[in-house]
Image 1 (cartoon, rainbow, N blue to C red):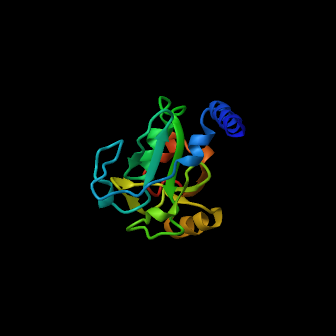
Image 2 (image 1 turned 60 degrees about the vertical axis):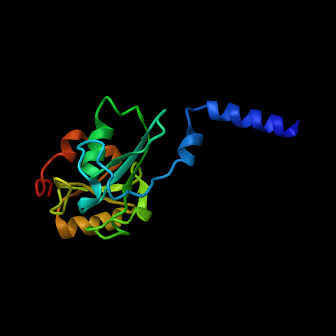
Image 3 (image 1 turned 120 degrees about the horizontal axis):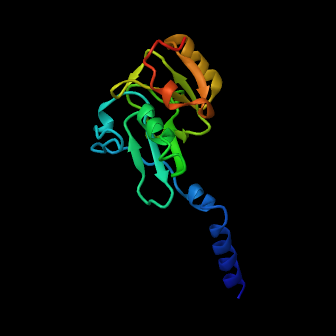
Length: 166
């Protein structure tokens, strides 16, 4: 009987607040050799720079992106803003630019971004993503660009070409 009431409590909690339970269970996954970008269709592993991943509410499959710019273009599109449940980016303070390690994915909504740096990712300019603001600041001093937090990102500022945001 105690088990039944515990199970009922868990089920009731799972129904509240649309899936915080699911968000805790879901994690970023490794990007495999042949995985294609959800936005542009390019093979993700062929490019340098940080990548991104996202779960949509109600979807089981994770969406993978060849760059932070493609991920953020998808996330910030008005049609998708309410669909996302959990999003990740590589912490470039922990992993090399040329071959980001999938062990170093972080929550994209708490990350710091350098917009407009000289560093390129898939299809040219991309946003460098970091877990810590001071590390993002050092990167911006070395490679140019402006440090922004997730809430400050817009479709306009993530799509500006490199060197325009000094």
